[in-house]
Image (cartoon, rainbow over all chains, first blue to last red; front, side, top):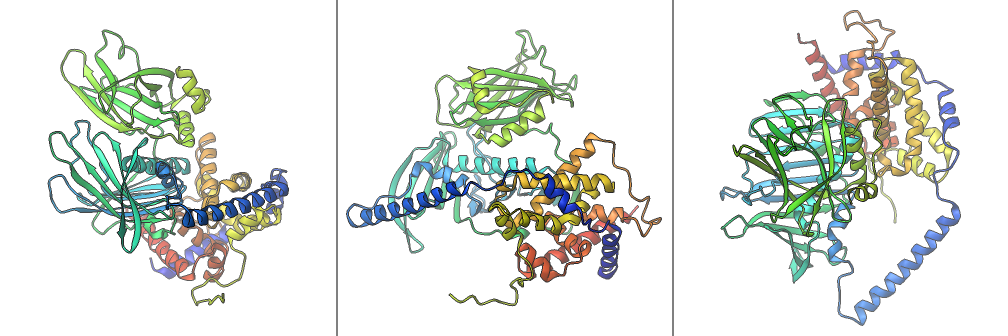
Length: 428
Length: 182
């Protein structure tokens, strides 16, 4: 089909659609809510006056700091992860250093709020044994408001699947949260190492320990408190610490071209179109002898509790029915532990079967001694001693929108989603 | 400071979406009326692609405009209004489809296409375009705006619109040729 033929067909389609309805806009306007979207003018004036006062005070304090006192950072370093989470756009470029000392591999990461992200390269986490993840694939994952594209460069394959705007927004938030937790940790302590000039800019260098096995060194701009360069180190069992990742470009709140989120499938790639993301899709989990632990959601609440939505799929009966699985004489034992090996106690809050037949458990995994770590290990043991399987998940910061969405997807339609506060209270 | 306009700047033909959104948020309901008029056919076409019924599409479109108005404050990037609105429209249409019977075909096949009826395959292919390309195609062919006017509305350079349009052409040609294959 030539461009001209296509344009003719498009023009015909335009003509075949109903013409503009002169009453349509009026009907919409008549049905708009009565209240205006703006804040009252008095509040506007109050805010403006407050902002002006705050700006004046900030200027005076800044001048005072420069003239009278020793220069101190104008930001709280402990809030660095939070500042990164609030960004509108983030573009990071860096290198990942494989554990086998093969040449470093490029990685590139984009986030554009509220719904777009792209991860090009590999961002692996430490495995449950503490050994670094080996790079076995080079993926390019692009998620936009309506679809997720996955290009796999080693196998020359690609897949595209539809998703709802809610799923896309939740996915983008989760990606950003996981990245922030991986780089900075959820409860990291920062220690200033030194001041250093990098690319002609004087920067402050801090160190933090996101998990027991990882350490990040962050070059921070004293002007805005945002990272300029990051090095991420990891320690595997009985081996010296090694540089795992170096991020050398961090562009913040700069426009990202639309092309970034609409990559063309390279010639020769096998393209598969997958059905839209199902509500029953899960993040993964350990699997043994026909039993698979499905983890639909795991997150960390503002007060530090771990919320998890999970199920066990029994392949022998193709069901996620809970009966017998947790009985003393049941076929399997399931346990959750922290990255330090401390046991996490499950407190079941809600249990429901959805119309697709999945029975999901919504629980809090209570830590008897709070730890500064977000990695959750899970393990299935066959009761007859025939073996075990385990995996891990990062409990990223809870996003209320996603928390609400996943509850609606995993509980019967008649059950109202709980707020985080209600959920925590019910678990006590 | 003097502003030097370049040949690639959008011409000042219309207020941009971002402008109209800002005015709406400042309390000017008339500005929102302009957005409704601007995107009426685009949103209806978006709904029609899913619902396959003109009356349902008109109802869903009205619903989408009202829902967008209610949530307008949550729109982070006002320049992205059109894509955001269409996503709302599409999601509402999908939800409606699930609540009612499966969508019926508007036409039987390409071969037996009635010229007065919408070309269902093409409409579906347009609906499957990435959001920014979809808006540009709909504004150009359904509302007959030229590229300069679209650039002015969306607040983007003409070059970007042209690029999105040619990319959309390529995608549509590919999608339609794939469908023709047995």
